[in-house]
Length: 196
Image (cartoon, rainbow, N blue to C red; front, side):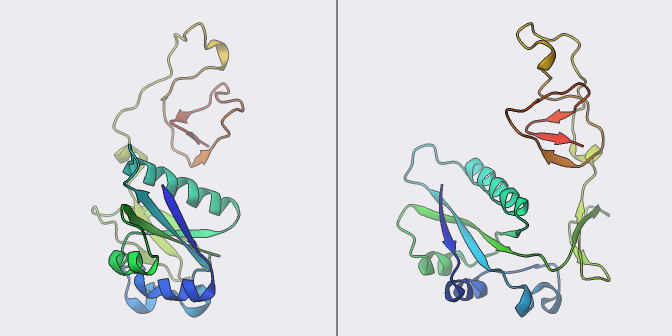
């Protein structure tokens, strides 16, 4: 993975027309207003010259980058609807380095909330306060298998161990610290996320 941070006002202004915002909304609603423009972009790049380069790494990088930004009060938008040829030229990418996504960074001026998906549509929309309503499938639709907590723990795990996947109840995903108490009694863990 490689990255280019675009943060000077001139560079941000040069990138702005090469990214496309909120395609499901009319331009007058989806385009950021002058006081809503991002303060920076990060180009997320894949170095195809490296052995083992994987798009999984891109996904992990995007998740980590956006979560870290939000932890500091900075909003983000992962942008795939971008003019890759023009951005590749603008950013002067070397051969073998591929532009995957642009991430816009800035301070949110409106709310964003998840809403239940209707009729399979993922089209987001604005509410009366200009907040984004983003349709998502329910946990029951996403979760294909619901395993339950194992009663037989391996001896080396003792009381602190827990299954990789245990019964899921509805909730909000929250990251949990790695070397802390990973599996308190009654906790629910799915991969690296804890349901609250």
